[in-house]
Length: 166
Picture 1 (cartoon, one colour):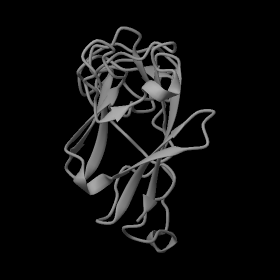
Picture 2 (cartoon, one colour):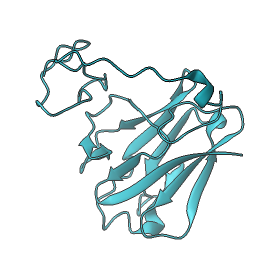
Picture 3 (cartoon, one colour):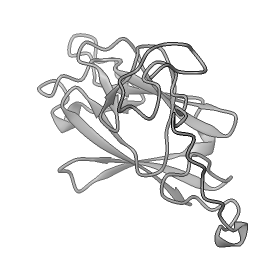
Picture 4 (cartoon, helix red, strand yellow):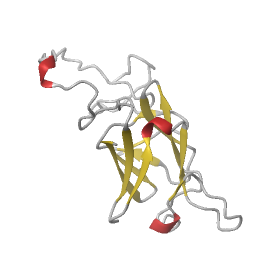
């Protein structure tokens, strides 16, 4: 299927363009069911929401770990995710070293979460083992919208993204 936004070819079963993140249009022209706006509370994050309000935490849940990492989503400009450099000790803002990041193939500066226009985006920083958003490999340096409930994989380390009211 060809993306109407960037013009790149995607697989036939792909619903979101792997190059630009644009939602691909159904070639059969199936119409979308209309929902009643009264069913949704404005400004409250729901599963799958890309927006958050002024008092929202971004929670990173590391697979197999009881502990979570919590950040104020409204304070994020760029949040680099990776592991510490064993020689210099330099570490990114989200240091996954204590979660066996080296053994799981996480680069020192693997990915970044950036805030733009009231949403958070995930961007692979040309990592050695790739960054995956809900199972789809990201194109390096091309941001993709993060939503509540998304799973990201950095090498072989999986992180669940959750937005929670502070």
